[in-house]
Image 1 (spheres, rainbow, N blue to C red):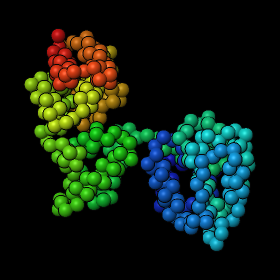
Image 2 (cartoon, one colour; image 1 turned 90 degrees about the vertical axis):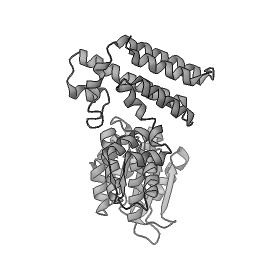
Image 3 (cartoon, rainbow, N blue to C red; image 1 turned 120 degrees about the horizontal axis):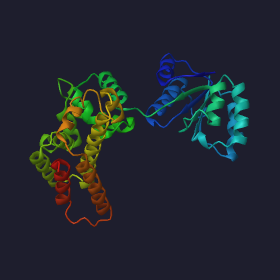
Length: 335
């Protein structure tokens, strides 16, 4: 029938348009579940006309029989098949036959983590159903999603606040949505309804002086004193040493990547894309890497970080603070 991008799918659902068969693929779970909930809300099935299955040989026939059965005292029947990537090829043939002539009063939804076009289920659904693939979002897409949710809830958000939120929760929409819910509750009585960097820190339980994400900025500025002082404060406040180790290591990796690409005359656009930099939030990153003269020092620091990680995981690291401070000194030494 059709392959829809996610935005087009939600546009159809906003207009209350329901198709007889959907295949919702890809690894991004939050919006996929949201699409199912919107379909469910439009159909509004009672308990006799909604069924959820995890596919196996024993229930394939049951599912197809149900799909071909008109709803009981209702307009539509809703059938959801989870983990549809587990459908075996011999069973899939029976479903393909159904897809060629689906019952109009049934809405059948395949949910799968699969997203490769060569997958047998996805190929069948491309020809006979509506297929939408939910890919994980990159940072810029996640930023736009956060801003849309903030606006929908009648709040405003500073650029730095959105960046910090994504730096904290990553681009996983379930995690971002949970953090936003906490922030909306935190600001419920705030007249300005503005989410700032400090708002995010407070919601996360950090003070402005104990912001672990400021450590990356201190390292990039090559501010030894501030980097060491902040590390001490964070450890004293109960921050996990492994979390700080990852911040130090990831910062060093980005610096090393940028320096190597600059040496090979990559364009700024190429550097931003391949080093995983954000055009707005990391706009000064490339220039600041000039402060790091010796790439070998960064390589040595990365090797040292792996040694520290190994000791942490085996519970053999007796003094995490000294090890992290030593690593910071290695990253910033330039010797």
